[in-house]
Image (cartoon, rainbow, N blue to C red; front, side, top):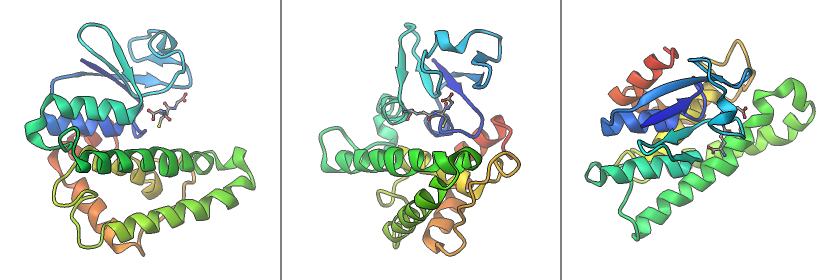
Length: 209
Ligand SMILES: N[C@@H](CCC(=O)N[C@@H](CS)C(=O)NCC(=O)O)C(=O)O
């Protein structure tokens, strides 16, 4: 398997999931400005839409869209519990989280990451994003992870997105400026997830620590 990634982007989520599962995959870094992979190949030949993540399977077929990729990976080792069993209510809860993260957080962040271009639009989207993070903070009250006691692929996705707000590695490039100091449940969750070996390994590999 191959995972095409951009350091610190949403592809950090499947990267963490690969590590959590202990799956062997080749990581291929993509320069999204040049649309080139690190070995100089044309990335538009891999994904004509130009974005990551893309998971390439051993038969050469490719899966796109982060929420689909992380579920595919986690279903390879269901015994590790990174996703609830298919057909259960808990599985729909997981999908509810993944859809929420993709539409309400992931895409909500984009104008902030490109604040210079977005202009006044930032003033509209920033309070919405802050409201959604505050809502996540409420959901985490009394729970270790988004779905309860077990770390799932939804936590991996939220971690990648929360990193943009913390801006540890974006500070110099973007001004995301979403802080969680007042959101104690989210902050505690973030600090705990950051300590997971699979997460630290992914951050190191992507040059984010
Ligand atoms: N719908 C896609 C969106 C992925 C996406 O937004 N990827 C960003 C990084 S977080 C990217 O590759 N941007 C570079 C580009 O669009 O050229 C998914 O959820 O997987």
